[in-house]
Amino acid sequence: MSDDADSDSNGEIQRQEDLPLERHHLIVEECINKLGGKIRACLRSAYRGLRLSWTLQPIDSEMSLFRAITAEEEAASALMLALKQQRYPGAHKLNPRDHSHKSAISPFLDAVGNMLAGANLPPSKLTVKRGNRPAIHLSFDLGAFVQHTNLRFAQPDNPFNFTLRVEGKPGVYMFEKELLEIATGGGAESIRQHVQNEANLRNRLLYATDEGYPTVVFQNEALLRRRDRVYRLCLLTIGVLQTKQHQLFAAQCLQAFLLMLGKIVDDPIDFTTTKRIEGFYMTIVQQQDGSREMKRGYTMVAGSNIGWEFLATMNAAVKMT
Image (cartoon, rainbow, N blue to C red; front, side):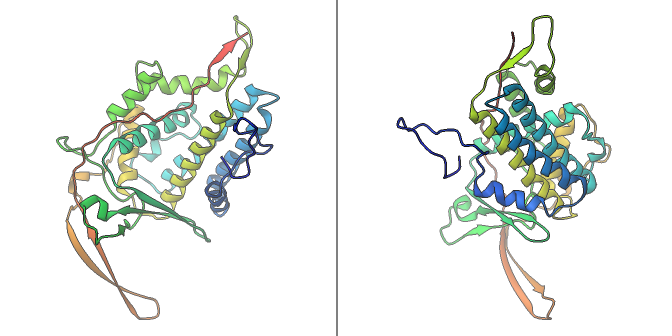
């Protein structure tokens, strides 16, 4: 919630006239305006849809929720287009026009987030670089990870250029447990059924049935969660576009996502061949002016005990009247 929200005498937050956007939301909106082509158009459409959704809620809750859902779908389309543009293995099987593909991305990202939230990982910092070519950077608290007070934050060369493995499991992790938890938590028997239910929600908001016409009631927080999902998708899109390199964690997640959809990756990345060297390293980088800069870092290999922590997802109950 933004800082300029008012409170009533009971301390409850009153509804603002405009969609609450905090500084980090606005910074990312500034960045997406510097992207190009359809990706930029999709993300700008997503922010516009969120604002319209907030405005519509008091007068037309069904269209408000429809706008919020389509805003998230636009952002999901942008991420798929970014993966296709960078030619990630299997990305050609993504269909930005398919509602089931678009609706599947946020539940999948929730599963990844649940897995990371349950892992014993140190805190990280996210930095958004504004400029003609927007970029994001992740920094990990290396000192906390290896319990060494003299070590500070370390930054991968690109934000998603790492792999995630679980001790005792072969290969990279495919988030099977977390996907099942999300599905069954929503009353679905499988993640595919859960995704189909999400995809059908937008249609249930629009059309009458034999039981009547649809009405929906939800709180402001439901739209704010959609806002934050769009923000997350914008960050991921920027991160994918900032380098032509196929970042390992992005490739890992894409392969897991395609498996969730029942797609087979024809030319998967062989994660077992990636080198895993632990220890300090030093790199000499020659600058454009001819001078040389020394960079030091630390490459770390560590196992984590992975648990699961529930992160709430938005569920709006639609009833026919």
